[in-house]
Amino acid sequence: MPASPDPALARRVFLVTFGLFVGACLFSLGGSVLINFFPAQAAAALGWIAEHLGLAYPDLIKGPTWAYMALLPVLAFSLYVPELGWARSFGFLAWGAAVGATSELIGTNTGFPFGHYSYGEWLGAKIAGDVPYFIPPSWYALSLVSLDLARRLGLNRAGRVLATAAFMVLWDVALDPAMNHAFPFWQYRADGVYFGMPLVNWGGWFLTSAIIALGYEKLLGGLAPAPDAFVRRWGPRVYAANVLFPVGICLVFGAPLAGLFGLLGLAVPMALLKRRSGAARREVVPA
Image (cartoon, rainbow, N blue to C red; front, side, top):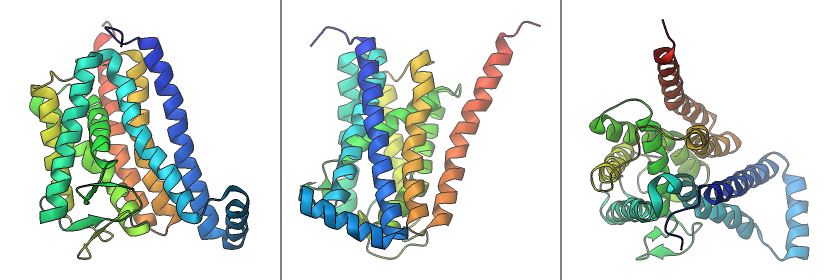
């Protein structure tokens, strides 16, 4: 491994990964539209795929979903490694995934801090039989992107930690209905008030995300005060893509209100970033 990352190579890896990531999302959404709105055509397509490619319906669900989950941490790592360097990048990955895994293992066994829930079999093998291996790296990936958005708001350390946690909760506004209500990747033991989700779950998201962000800031030195031009352009796009995918799932699987709430949640960080960017431009304009 080179002593320091090659920014040009990292950006090429990121762009290829982002293309594959969006492709996996579009494949899932396209298949969902076909199955829900054109069942006859979907049955014919599934029959042809099974006969000629040997893939059954569960394979077509797991394939793009596993690709989405596997590519997500690669996106975050390749986007921020030029800024963080190798050692700190692996430190961020280890801390975010470790805190995420710990909170999920506690949550699936005790109900704290997310409420009582369990994962199904769609996300593959599980840590200790409870938490899919894909889940902890996703905590790292989106918490790092959320921290990137938070640093752009001109906040102090405490403000960045709280904003990171809030942006993570806003991501879950559409994610939980999509993965619990529309398509059961995980399920709660008691039917919650928000599309099957108990509201305490958002408290768990906020707490877990705040702990991750605090570790990023205090233990690992955080991010630079401002991103470079490439990260400034692509960080919000990664966040938006991860919100829009579950929004689309909600719309296709008959939870349009959750999709609308997800879009409103996405509008909050985007509006804050636009406002902050406008204020920064005004500050540099001479009188």
